[in-house]
Structure formats: C-alpha cells, structure tokens
Amino acid sequence: MIVAGNSNVACLDQLGARLEVDGQPAEVCWVGALRFAHLFNGHPAGKRVRERFAVAPRAKAIAIGTHDIFDVCDAAGRGTVEETIGKLMDHAERLFAELGAMGAIAWLVFPQPRNAVHYVHLGPRDIHTVAVKVNRHLAEVALRHGVQVLDPFAQLEGVDLDPKLLQRDGQHLNADGAARVASALGAAFGVTAQLSRTQCPDAEPNDELASFCGMLLQAVGIRSGGDVMVSLIEIITERLAERGLTLEVTPELELVEAGLLDSLDLVDVYAEATRAAGLDIPFDVSLRELNTVERMATFIQGHLGTPERPSREDFERSMGAARGQLDPTAADDAHQRIAAMDPSLAQAIMEQVEVTLYGVTCPYGVVLLWMGLFTLARGDATGAAELVLLAGKVPFAVDAALVARVMEAVEAADLAAAS
Image (cartoon, rainbow, N blue to C red):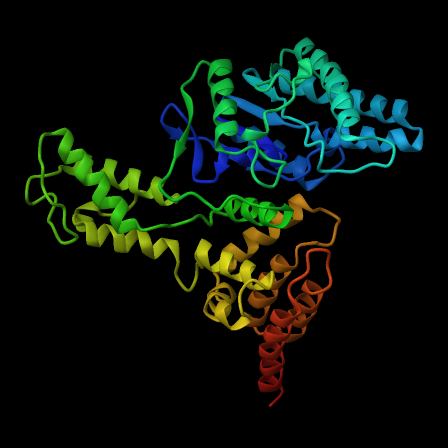
C-alpha cells in the first residue's frame, strides 16, 4: 500500500510510529502542500505522486484538498469564490476519474487545521464550515468515479476534531490520531493495517519549523536511533521467555552456537531491531556473522550515524543551536558530520525540498544551513557563504551567533583556498 499526499500523511511515519500493512511497512509519500491542480500543471509534487502510483502496489490512498480549501477561503476575501471552486471541481473531476480507473484507491479526508492560516474576513469556525461544504462536493465527485472516501474523523459531517489527537504543533495528527487513519485504511482495503510503535519515538514538534524538519528528515530516511543494544537484549530476552528460557542475555553471548536461536530467529530479531531503531536496512547481510547482540548492535548503530550519514540526533542538535537553545560550539561535531554527509543524502534532501517548496525560497534557515555546510565541504566557499547568510535572513532564521560561527569556517576555507 502507498499513502501519498500533503503533510497529513506524515503522521503515518513519524513520532516513533510507522504504518504497516499485513506486517510489512507501507510506503508513505509526503509531497508538501499538494493541490488538485498540481497533478496537471507539471508541479514536482504532482509528478512524484504520479510516479509512485504508477509503480506502487494495488492499494493506493491520496490525501489532498486541505490547501485547496485554504485557497477557497482566500478567494472569499477577493470575491472570486465561484471561479476558484469551479477550477477546483474541474480538476477533481479529472483526477478522480483517472484514479477511479486504477481500481483499489481511496481519498483520505483529513481535519482542516483551522488555526494554521488566519484571515481578516474569516474566523476558525468559518474555515471549518467552508471545509465541510467543499469536502462534501469533492466526496460526491470521488464516489461517482469509484474512488472510496475515507473520513476517519467525520469531517464530512462537520464533527469537530478532538484536540487530544493533535500534535503540540496544533496542526498535524499525533500517533493516536494516525492509528485511527490506519484503522480506516485497513477496513477500506480489507487488510490488516496498523501503526507499529518503535521504542525510539521522535520528539513531538512544537511548531512549524520542528514539524517541517521532522517530516523532511523522515522522508529522506533519517530516523531516531535510541539504544540499539538495550533494544536487542529486550527483544531476544522476550523471545527466549516465550520458550520458557530465563537466561541473562549479555552482549557477547553466542546466540546460534549456544542453540538459543536459529537462522530464522536471527532474521526476525534483526527485522524487529531495525524497525525499533526506525531504519530501513537491506537484508543482504550475513546474519551468521552477527550472531551476538554486540555484533548486531554495532552493525545497526553504524547505519544510524556515520561520517557519511549523520544521525537524527546530529540534525536535532543543529536545530537546537539554530534556535539559540544551544551554544553554537555545542553543535560543532554535529555540523562536521552534516557537512560530510554522503552526496546521495544531500541530493535527497534537496530534491525533497524542491518538491515540497517548489518555486518558493526555503523559509527554514536551518535547512539552508545544512546545505551550506555540505556545499562548504565540497569546496565551494562562495556558494556556502550565500546559503549560510540567507539562513540568517529567512522567516525561520538561524540564530545570529550560529551564522557567525559557521561563517568563520567558511571564510577560513576561502582563505585557505586562495593561498
């Protein structure tokens, strides 16, 4: 199964919880502020959805409409509501007709984040009323073309969302809210869909900056690690207890040679441990060589944070310094690892930003800072300086002390290159 669309879908792959369908991780494809028009005007978000749907398994779900409704609200202040709704419905007819021909597909209706956008002419209750009316019209179009309408929170009936289901940012669903979405997906497609909780929950975002950066890092595969050794010991101890074995599992204990686990057990333990760590690691490894907790933990930990792949904790430390919550020097090591990230990771970050913020200068200074650090490590001091300085000027600007700290390194590199 694939669930694609706006930022609402990110709740299915964050905060230490991931959507699983019939025991396998589902694909969650976040493409930013997706609108119906984006599927027809060459927008990279629409292109990515089309690309993923073309190769995805049979069951597909799309979250779209939230930002179209904001456009309708905005049009109310300009006196162009009828024109805006007309274009929206034309695009909806085309898209739902196309999607309906694919077979098992559903449109996910998410709660409208009524406090995310402010209008002089409309209050939160008015935004909710507009959302209910527009979504009902969209639902009629979807059903007419054979697209299921999933409304886990009764938004089509105008029911208010329980605020206990929202993250601290007040906009996106928390893990409990996401679990309700997973249940609706399972019922719609006749599969077992649930949220698999890991032992390493990500920090719940408090605001837009933390929310965007969290979704960005998840989208490119940078997840929280946690204590892998402890997780492995707990997993193996529980497995042995199920067999009536009460044994102290130590890091150096030989698991296979001692007759405690067989090869299939190792695969299961490895899969559970990587899922708990929030990683997608290929299984083309020799698990026979990883037959102790220590060896397996070392292997998994190596994928959590290496010079070529900074850890989630490195990025979060950078965000703390960018907000002025940490002394700039406290993030030096993290910034060195971010600067040395593998080009494929840097490319993934840049592509995700391009898809989600197409045509708009990135307003999140810390993301520009990360790209500036990478650019500096590649020997382009001029390009790095432009990015770092811009990071201190955008709406979500990096703290001035950190900008100055990084610019010292940029200028030193520039002088070294000149000499």
